[in-house]
Image 1 (tube, helix red, strand yellow):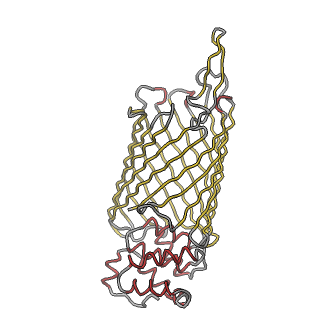
Image 2 (cartoon, helix red, strand yellow):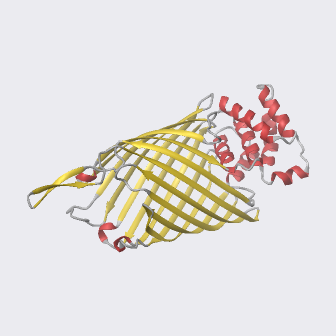
Image 3 (cartoon, one colour):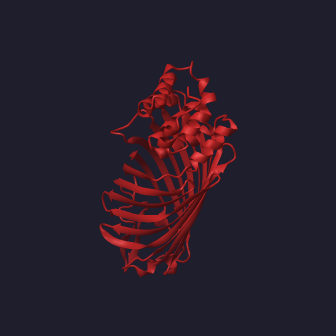
Amino acid sequence: MIPARTPRGALRRLGALGLALLLCVAPMAQAQEAADPRWVEAGELVRAGRPAEALPLLEMLVADAPDNAPYRLELAAVLLRLGQGQRARFHLARARGGALPDDVRETVNGLLAGLPLRTTWERSLSFAFRPESNPARGSTGFILVNGVPVEVGTAGAGEPGRSFTVTAEGGRQWALSPRRALFAAGSVEHVARSGKLEDTTVLRARGGLRTVVGATKVEAALRWSEILVEDTALAQGPGVTASLARPLGRHGDGYVSAWLDRLTYGDLPGLDGTDSGASIGYAYALSPSTRLSFALGYARRNARAEGSRLTTVNQAIGIDHSFRGGLSVGGTLTRTRSWRDAATGFFTVVQKDTRDTVALRASHSRLNVMGFAPVAEIARERQDSTIPLLRYENDRASISFTRRF
């Protein structure tokens, strides 16, 4: 399907290893030509320099045969040529679950690391609507004050509600060499909530350096964060982030990340301090259609007030599977434990919480709304706590739409 030789001009126009991937896949791809006429037609379009027209054919092939690694690799190569790196990396990671020749696997590993690093833009826009049975995540109770019962607890606890979230991200990367680049990025997330819950906005800007050593991608950056509640500044401050990602074994990918923010809370000086954390994760492609994931996270808030100092640890395990026809489903189990250093407020015991969450999600590769891919999710979470008012159950559903540019 793929020509054995490609003009140098095409190599320059490609600007990525997408073409190298096409050449590596050629011996694998030839065996697929007789299987589906769409495969032959897509190959002719690619050879004619019309990858955008080949894209829908390849997307249909992957939807109908999610376990076919050559289909996914060809789709990833076309996506790279069209500048859709995030989508390409999704299919490259899934393809690692197949039986790939060593030279193809080596090329895929390099592409997942971002080789070669290029001067490019990356942008995304997301919308999410989420109804919940208990979005305040708490309960209410009564205490006696001078013999009079007074209701206390989280505002809106136990009441159903809904939220609408808009997230926009954008960034620019400037390549210094095929393995080193500077970048700058910004994001805004606004959550509008119903009832007694307050709206929040988080603004972030960051910039730093990316480098690739072998197939390991390393990133370090400085950032600035602004947190607003009901359009009023709550906290702000500088921070630093670092991450490392690389293939592990023939079918796995791992990452390590860490961050630290020095936040100032203005009218709430007791919350001033350093927030920090780290996470590690591992994903294993059982096949091109099935992927397992594991994650472990740690976060620490070192606030000025002892009762506001908090430690959080979470563990998660998930699975995602693509069925013939384009349907993808997944599930995640998460346990989060947190504890404060001292009692706070009028409570005489130290707060210690354990929250368990199970989430199920579904999407379909052939569904989109003006280019936005929808994902539906339902979840149930339950928290136990040493403080009865913080024990709760919450059911939620969400529909989100994301588009990458």
